[in-house]
Image (cartoon, rainbow, N blue to C red; front, side):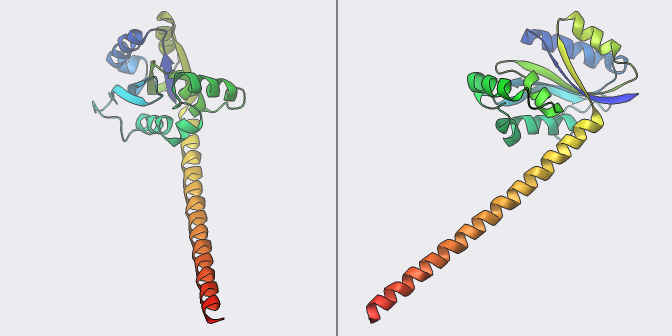
Length: 196
C-alpha cells in the first residue's frame, strides 16, 4: 500500500459531489482515508463544502492533513501563488508560474479553479487503477502525489513562514529603534537650539 494525496476535478461542479459520494461509500476499494470537497469562489476564497475522515467517521477535516492542505491553499501561500486573486488575476498568475513550479501544492491549487470545486483526498492505495478508472469514467482529472512529498512541502512551507515572520519582526524592531533614535536626535537638536 502506498499513501497519496490526490486532487480530483471535473468539468461540472455537480459531478464532483456525485463522485465524492461514490468514493466515500466505496472507501476501502479505492483506498480512501479522508476526503473533502473544496470550492473556490470567483474572488478566489476556498471553502470546504463536505469532508471527513472515512476510517473513523469523523466529519471534520480541520485538523487533518487535508485540512492543513486546504489551509495552505486558502491562506497567504495560496495568495502568493495566485490562487486567491479571483478568476481573472488568478488564472494569469497560475499560467505564468506553472512552467516554473512543479510542486504538489501548486498542482493541487491549480486543480481548484475559480468558480469551481474539487475533491482533495488522502488515500492508501495498493493499486491506483480503481480510483483512476472512476475518475476517468466521469471525464475527470486527477493529480496524485506521494504523501511523504506533500508532508515535506508542508513542513518546508511552515519553516519558510516562520522564517519570514521572524524576519518581519526583526525589521519592524529595527525600524522602531531607528525611529526612536531619530526622535532622540531631533529632541537633542531642539534643546541645543534653545540653549545656543
